Amino acid sequence: MTEFEQYFSALYDGTILACDKMKRVSEMLLNQFASPGEFHFDYEVAKWHIAFIERFCKQPTGKLGQPLQLELFQKARLQAIFGFVDDNNLRQYNEVMIVEGRKNGKTTECAAVETDLLLNDGEGAPEIYNVATMLDQAKLGFNACYKMVRQSPTLRKHIRKRAADLYAPSNLGFIKALASNTNSLDGLNVHGAIIDELAAIKNRDIYDLIKQAMGAREQPLLFCITTNGFVRSGIFDAQYEYAKKVLDGKIKAPRFLPFIYELDDASEWDKPEMWIKANPGLGTIKKKEYLEEMVQKAKNDPSFKPTVLVKDFNIPQTAQSAWLTFEDLNNEELLPEGGAFRYCIGGFDAADSIDLNAAKAICKRRGDDKLYIKQMYWIPQAVLDQQEERGDRRERDGVPYSLWVSQGLMRTCEGRRVNKRVILDWFCELRDREDIYPLYIGYDPWHISDELLAAFEQEFGRNVMVKIRQGVLTLSQPMKDLKAEFQEKKIVYNNNPIDKWCLINTEEKKDVNGNVQPVKSDERTRRIDGTAALLDAYVVYCNKRDEFESLI
Image 1 (cartoon, rainbow, N blue to C red):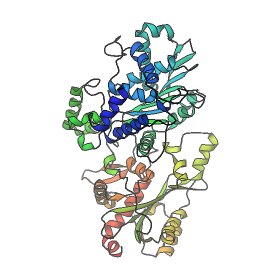
Image 2: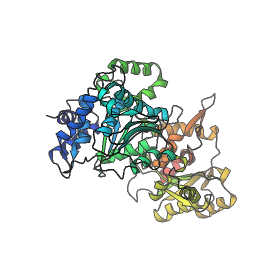
Image 3: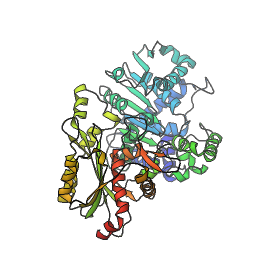
Image 4: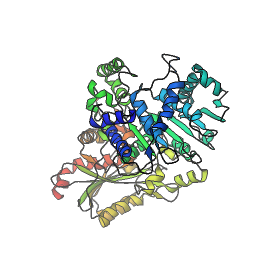
């Protein structure tokens, strides 16, 4: 059997303990191996690349100068990446996402792949890039390549160090480190790229630019290597969701190959037999004793636990100061189909500037203790127009506003401000189109004019509008209760990505008496408007619960 068959069969049948996603990857690859279509598995092609790496690449750290001996899991996935080819021996996969715990050899493995792509891939003038948010991070992989070259007499003959790159005179190719500066990334002709620590990137500029720069190559290869991280709703989460849909069979992406090593549940973090799920190199590349020390430290120091969960086990987390952990807020349950609700309790957060405006409607069903959330967001059209005029790929606040608008999750308003009348129009839509009648609507009176308030009262009645003063006196206990509802998975918000982003961004401020209120983080771009709207609605819900539930 090939290493490919040995490893992925062992994952699939449980001989090697694996998480659910790696079992799905194994099933997908084994099926493709057994029933080839446009692409078939060619062991000789796969072996060509692995033989080059093990013959010419040396250890860049630790046992310096020793040949790089790939582990079974590394050989198997490299065989999957390089071995599936068409009848012209052009490979199938041009994008690979590797998510695994720290210290499992990702950087060394990818440095060897870069060297192979430079000299052993049959490409003329190949451009190979190490890309990261900061240049120092990008240089980690680049320096690993350089150390491999320095320690190999054969590689030294074919690759020379220049001021800014490693250059191969025989084919005019190079390896170069780049930081995430959009000006320096324009105009590239990428044959191979490593995007390091994807989870630390706050916007998708790097990924989009590199991906678009591969179009002129016959068989380019993009590696995204990372552990999980604390940055939520960024490019990592987008790619992770994309990988999930591929593995679930919801979308077809025959050129994309994910390897996601993680614990299936956060409760497995202190069970040593489960650790291999997130650490395929455990016991060989990564010392088990080291991981035991990290887990024990996390038990002794709870403030260190989120780092261990994220970096060693790939369990997503939010910032330590966040109101909710990612495990608390993440709920992928969808709302029931139309006609399930008759009444709602609304809330909205209106802004006078170019910030978001948000509205929420809390709905319930008789005999069901869950709260079902309908929502809408608004942003000035000028925000998107200015971006388009500048030709700027970076979305404001580092999130995909344009995509959310196209998906119907957000609406735009002409000009530079949102006319708050649209919030009233949305609640009227709930009433007139979905037959959901707002029983009460909570609002912060700070940003609401008397004219708009009168318009709400004309539509829904004088007693419908409820002022929600912002501060600990009003918000503390409802905020604590709402947190408990999230932890019990009783808040169903249709897996709305804007809701999730706002919840991730929400931090809590405590006073000396333990009272809490929501606050933004220090980063100006971290919006919490959706959380504020939900809290306004929830305060009213807590006060009017008996009346509300008597009508549903």
